[in-house]
Image 1: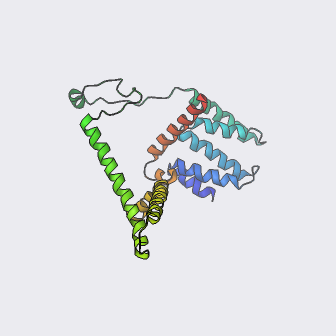
Image 2 (image 1 turned 120 degrees about the vertical axis):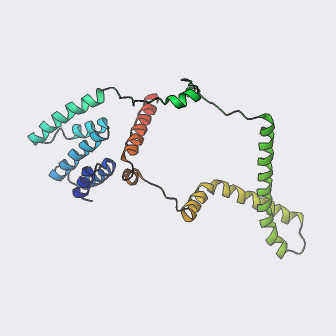
Image 3 (image 1 turned 90 degrees about the vertical axis):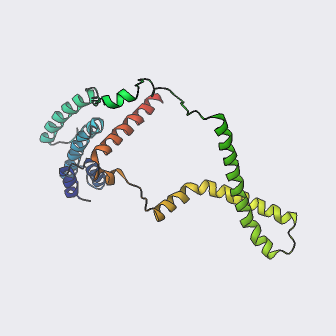
Length: 230
C-alpha cells in the first residue's frame, strides 16, 4: 500500500478507491510522520469531493494538535470551507418533465407516500396461487422422501413402518437444512454457472463513480437517521 497509488486514484477522480487506499495506508504509519499527515490531507480532499464534509471535519479535528504551523493554517481554511458545506442545505436535483409521458400517464404526487402498499390479487387467482404453492411443496417433499426411501428399499427386504418413519424424518431434516442453506447454494450456483460476483464500492467506482457517490450519501444519511431515531 503506497501513497502513490492513492494519489493516482485522486488524479483519476476515483475518490472511493482513494479513500480506501488512504485509510488502509494510515493504519500502518506513524501518526507523527509527514507521510501520515499527507495521507490525512488527501483524505480530507477525497471526502470533500464526495460530499462527506462530516468525515473530513473529523479528520481535521484529529490533526489539531500537530505542531506544524503551515498545517494549522491549512486546517483553519479547510474547516471553514467544510463547515459551510455542512451548513448548506442539500441541493435538489432538477426534474425535467416529459410532457409526452405526462399526457398519457396522470400524475399523482402522493402515490409514493403510502405505507404498506400491496398489489391487489383477484380472489380466483389467490386460490390458484396457494394451490400451486401447496402442490410444489408436496412434490418437493415427496422427492426428498423418495430419495431417502430408495436406498432403504434397496438394502432392506421388508419395508416396515419404522423404516418409513426414518425416511420421513430424514426428508424433514434434509428439507430444513436445504432451506437454511439456500442463500449459500444460490450464491455458489450463480458464481459457477453464471459467473456472478460481488462488487465492492472500490470496484464499482471504476465504472460509475457518480453512482458510488449516491450510494455512499444515501447510506450515510440512512445511518444517521436511524441513530437519531434511536
